[in-house]
Picture 1 (cartoon, rainbow, N blue to C red):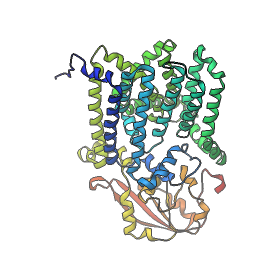
Picture 2 (cartoon, helix red, strand yellow):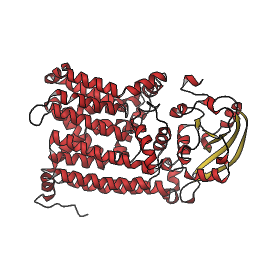
Picture 3 (cartoon, rainbow, N blue to C red):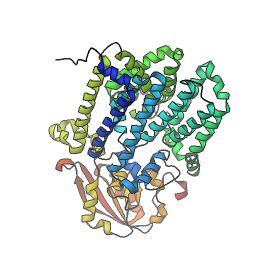
Picture 4 (cartoon, rainbow, N blue to C red):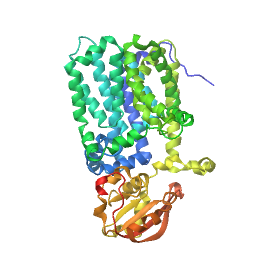
Length: 519
């Protein structure tokens, strides 16, 4: 097999060194176009549909997450609708994250390292997709990198020292916005405190009033989260914190290995392996290299906590560690830049990673859009197809309209869980009130169950998830009738089997599992 060769004069590297800003701008534009193609092709996922559904209501905060992402969705819905076009602001936001990462890495390690960091970030499978999705990670990433860059300018001034009053209040604002995006921000703040505590020369920073003003600003910015939780019995904090509590036997080695493997796959093996190598060398240098140590300290609490929690608690999800890995991209950029000075391997890695990413994306997104994999290799998907989560339930609206069910006055919808109800809500464009019979998350707060008394309900959900729902709901309605089911899917296949029931006259409020005021 012919190997990839590069000019002996290192013209590529020289051009990056001469104008790293131009190289980064080209990377950002190129990957933004790639994300636009993915966004237009891939249907809305479960988390996206759920986020869009609950974002129709403007509130101080929400059950699952702090409110910033939901606020953004709420204010963009009138402009873009509640479909895939809502991904546009998030693609733009990730472009901003890439540029902010370049500024951070350039400040710490130089412009060439910044180019490598941005390239690695955009070659990562998770970050490429998260940069296209309507989820909480996009605003979190932007704000965390903004905070890290602001603080780095104060800790490692390029020329003359910068007044702490120009650094810490701004950093507090960034951390506050990150806290309004996702609770992960607290762990990065813990990492910052550990960095300051680990270097004696930095201890005096904690005594400066500017850092306490910054902390007060951060608390003020996240105050809507605190107020909402106080009004709702701290359910969001309890829900998220409960995932770290011990469940069953300990240790759960299987869960731990699955979670670790998930990180390996989600980030992309082609990025995860060099990232671990770069992090290893940074850890070996430790505090002797204050700049890499700064990034390591910001990253470790998030990575360690969510990697170790599966040993005793919830199995976790592999993207929970990603805000921590994000903080290590400057270290990876510096490592690749140094390696590229003495050997062609990093450039070969970049070409191979780009080809791999595009190939994997085309295969997965192509299957998610058409289901061709089920036609070519049905045995592979015999036990389930995770890409069905990206299948939008748009055909359901047409089917309900054809049956005349959407013309019924004062109708509302009941489903068995937040996954199906989010898909139904997005398909119906939030035209009807939605309730969940069971663990409903934010949907428990969207409508007062008492306001639905006397109304009829469509009871809708996937057939395999609605077993026993008719019997469970019978005490709440005067009568319930089973309607003909409905199935739809990709390429003419019947992949989603929907069960439809009709409940006549709600006699007593449905139970609300979270909001005690409704019980």
